[in-house]
Length: 284
Image (cartoon, rainbow, N blue to C red; front, top):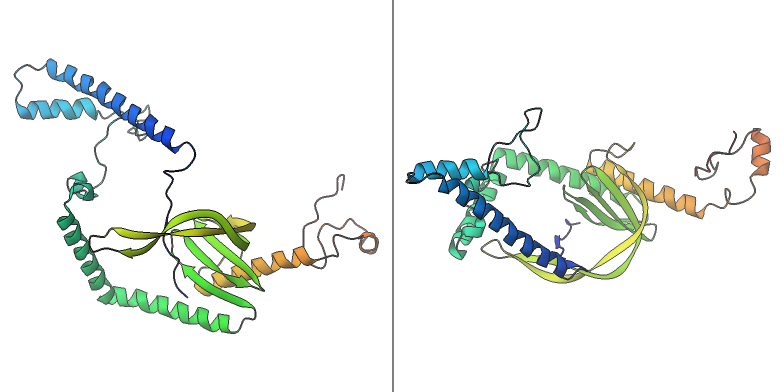
């Protein structure tokens, strides 16, 4: 088993993409024009100001500390704001401003930091725990019939794929919400799959056709039985898929249930064979 391949979706050719880019360019030009005159007006009131005074004027003019009625600063992002974190050294060391040589050096430094972390006691502890979970999953899967897990892994999103009782499946969870697709088939749509990473950290991609299936179940991580370990997640996926297959194949609740209702003395709300919810009878 291996982790899922990283896909990069290119929406540049999507319907309306060209019009969207044109609108963005017009909006950028108008934004620059408006703020250029806004700043020029502020400077015009300070004849002979020194550079530090002008810098203070520029910051106060472009990034005022607007606050709502409750005193909280505005966070909608419709006006200029200074960086709110030290990411990329507050913007002074953003990768967009680096030369190819600097990007290669930064990527080499990142890889070395990763190597040192995984060689550290904390890194070895995490790796050992993940290896133990993988061993437990392999052992559990070996005892299952007609179940294959081809790929699994990731945290944002977490993804699984494989087969259960001859049906291909795909599972995806992100931001605490998950879905399961069954009987995957080609969609005719292509994405850019990452094939390698260069010395400068730039990703190399190849086109790959995507598959999709019928969504048979959705929910959140609070769903009963969702589990926390890798084995518990596999058990949850397989039981959910098999419950669905059982309901689809069941012929009892699609037939005449009058005899069952007569024996119970009440309307049948759940199929006694597969557990499918049959709905609430009006007036009951």
